[in-house]
Image (cartoon, rainbow, N blue to C red; front, side):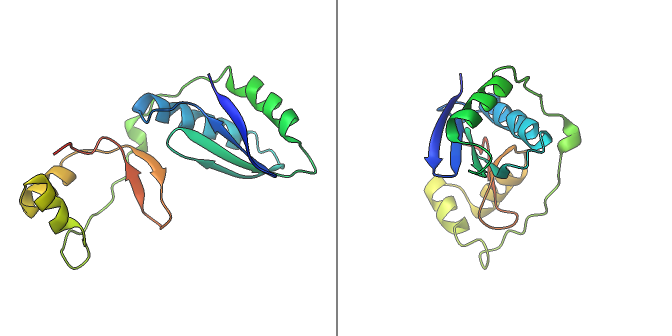
Length: 146
């Protein structure tokens, strides 16, 4: 069940879950696509995260309660889209101590060589659960426990 709460005078946050997981990420992604497809002029920003979506809206078009009611009706019947391999994006990664400032620290912390860290990191396909504050800075899911 979703929870919708006031975030500020002109924004609200929709919580889908309390735990970061593949299933909850798919809920957020499906809801984000649904909300974007509405093309609602009152939505100034729609920002997805791990388990929530922040919506900044025009307070001259909606108040919190009317928007909450509308969103509840839409999202209560949301169908969850399973990811497909068509969404696969290849990102080249450059591993070097000159730019990977935490590479040596990660290797020491995990009792692995730098080459082993690189091999583990580059040997799988990751889901992106959130986009960070810099272009290309993605928060990856299911990073190897080592």
